[in-house]
Image (cartoon, rainbow over all chains, first blue to last red; front, side, top):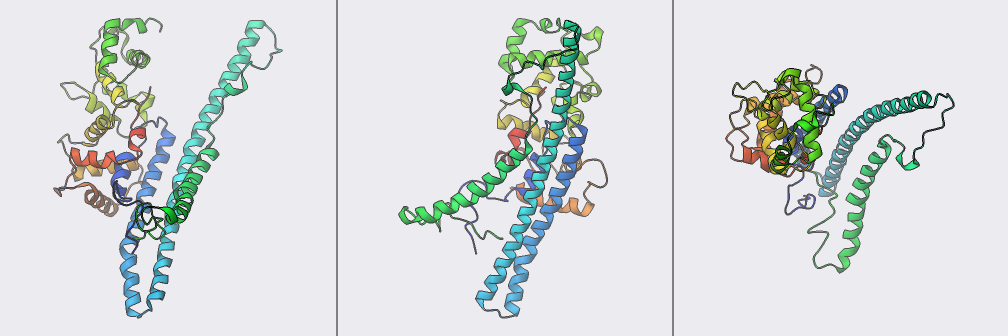
Length: 203
Length: 189
């Protein structure tokens, strides 16, 4: 069932190199801070463990449910319902992994924010003491900075929001709309062939 | 401080620009940082080596679990002690720069991960690699059973010719499809 896993056709199939990618490409060489590195270690370990559970579920669940359906001599409709329930559970698992990735992102951004804040405070102190020393007055006007140049921290809320919206809106919703409505006037059957909406891509 | 930049002759600078992926500013900054690592009396000579221990103290490498491997891979030292000349150092920065190609980056990544330098990633290399990525502390380490499972999964995914190791072309095959590799394999001064 559901052979049309994602776009299908050319390119790497989703999940083809899950473990290898995690091992070979997950370290960020720009990390230059011991605390961030520790967070990264913990998140890599967690992601390995989560991936284990997922692959185990994928290995064990389908045969199990099939056997149950067989033994109980379920009507195909009931068996299908079971299968859909299983897929739903797997999707929840995916969402869980996604949330973990987001937490990771938030931690990294908070780290950066802290360092930018420190640098800003330092620069302001520098400005005030320099001004006092140079003009010999304690009445210091606020620094002359264009509003566009004011130092800002990284806005993790925006980054996370953008990722979420892109994933859900473009990834799923728009594709579903396009496939459903363009299908009436398209050269091939969109729902069955290329760019089909994958509702049930369970193993 | 101001005199360090002028120590790099113009012709040498333009040669380095030709040979690396670095811009003029990046090379000058690299030279400044490199001379800071050298002892004062050695600063005049150009082929002076910085010992690995000194290189590892740089903030850009300090928290990197592969820092020693990186030094060994880019070092041209005969004694295999991981010490770097300025040209080794430029090589390193060039491979980790923004403009280096996927092929170059994946080639060096392979050599960094090849802990025993035998030209292929075997189980021992993969185990060391996993241990590097999960950190030193016990609570983030994988259990031996998890480790065995992980390595067998990885070999199943990437060992195309089923010889029990991942060679360079298999490695590049896996890496080239990864969306994150090029953006994360980067070190900037």
